[in-house]
Image (cartoon, rainbow, N blue to C red; front, top):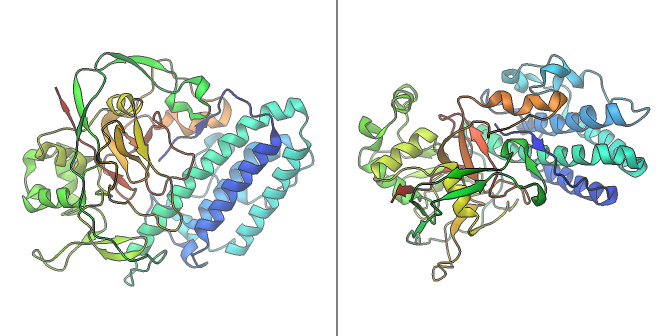
Length: 434
């Protein structure tokens, strides 16, 4: 679950540029859905996931409901029933179809959903082309919010279809993969982070951010070190081989209870034919032999914390992560042709890089609960529902994953999920006290 966005202080009044950015984001959603059949796009494999078709429709509903209905004179909704079908969490906007039953929406068809997108896109083009200056000032931040919201659903589209395909006995691939390269993991370096009072959170001059990244405020950090790279599959496999899932001394109480209840023996999507057989992992490229050098993915907070305890380390706090990233970080963006975590290569002789693999591979669990910053205020109106009310029972992740769209990461980004969630591309970066 991610938070709805906080508009930047810059109103981006050049609506021509806003329209171009809007189209770029909307086109990417359809590009990501293109490899999927109409049948693929209707599947919902668990209550936490949504069908691809629903993601395409819901992001369209957002623009229709938040922008077109109140701001485009004479706008005619595509289908009044869609306000019910594709609402997500907005109590103030009326009733909605139950989330666990989104996979039952065989109607409207895929073609109707695509017609819906074209209808709304045409109306948005009209709005952005004709808005008077006063209206432009009001709608520009909402359009920016809307495309950031759609980027969140682009990431969910890929993680949700991966889960759905993993439930299919044919284990289909979302996309073919080029020949694999066997790589050796770089050794981890330890970075001594700032240990004094530091400013954290979004700075208004830095452009767009989610409202949960504000307000900027000081925190006191005790002396610590943080690993410059992510934990690898091979390192995590050593934890398993040492009985990690059978030794309660490494686990938080709720984590151990979850392991017992769910029968976990390895990260999500790992499998092997026998205890002494090699591990394989299901990926968006199908089932592959596990690459020991790639970052471990699809672990819950409970698993991340247990691994850290086994390794004699701990998880960083979200503020340690952010403060270190502010001194230097490297990463990458989504490659639509290869949405999979990559091994760390190159740059081994450059100690100034800072946090490697900060973005572009896996989200990184922290030891911080999802709480409001001092002085936090939710957005006004219906948009207030999409953030503050989730600030309980969730854990913060930082960074960005191999399915996070370009332009959708920054050091202050606060992602959040329940501690047992692991269908997202979530992994581990270690820290320790000094």
